[in-house]
Length: 212
Ligand code: B12
Image 1 (cartoon, rainbow, N blue to C red):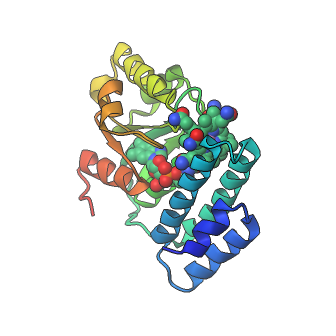
Image 2 (image 1 turned 30 degrees about the vertical axis):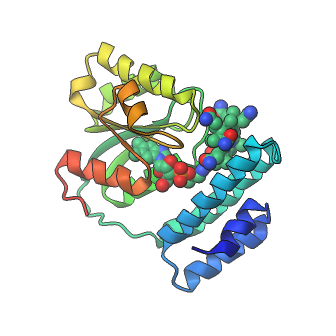
């Protein structure tokens, strides 16, 4: 772990943070480790926000810093993509939630691992998930959410798929923020994951591609 990078992000030294991340990557630090540092820093930012030491502008700046770093990290992440697509995945941040940095990393990782990803963006209503599943027949639906409120939206999305008669046609994974097995149970999803790598491994298992 690089304390320097964690501190630079958490202390809002945005330009320095991006430069440090670039230097670490150029020096051979694995991309996943750099993302791990970002996650540690974001937990600190989140705590400072809870403690009212930081406010919305800091959340926004931290979000922008992270996005800038993930743009440098992405091209250095390699996957096992082959030309044939491994399967189709419909992904989105659930209704009421606009956090998309984690979702975008999941989208990218699924893509480089050979999945066709229909990324519906943020604040996606259940009906949009239902319509897209009807249209593209994915094997997997992936729901992202960072707010406690999103747990209800995840549940409603799963229910909407059930009501549309599509639930048995797809596997549903959820993730983001504090999502855990209790949330999975609450939302009636098939699995949850804490990282983009979990998302890739779940998708591989469900589509019969050997998980690494
Ligand atoms: C940046 C940020 C923002 C930015 C988001 C920018 C953006 N474009 O995404 C902005 C400023 C917009 C924002 C707004 C708000 N935020 Co905010 N935000 C954050 C912060 C600091 C970081 C989130 C983040 O991007 N993390 C980085 C990524 C990379 O995280 P990650 O978890 O490692 O991602 C991995 C996994 O989640 C997983 N994953 C993600 N999706 C999926 C899906 C599947 C299927 C799987 C398997 C895995 C998976 O893979 C990712 C990659 O490995 C968090 C604090 C925190 N600790 O997370 C608060 C936090 C999430 N926000 C919070 C709050 C309260 C808000 C606001 C309500 C604030 C307000 N009063 O307006 C609004 C809500 C707006 C809305 N309607 O959504 C709270 C949520 C509290 C709660 N329990 O509900 C947090 C926890 C801060 C806090 N501690 O209070 N926020």
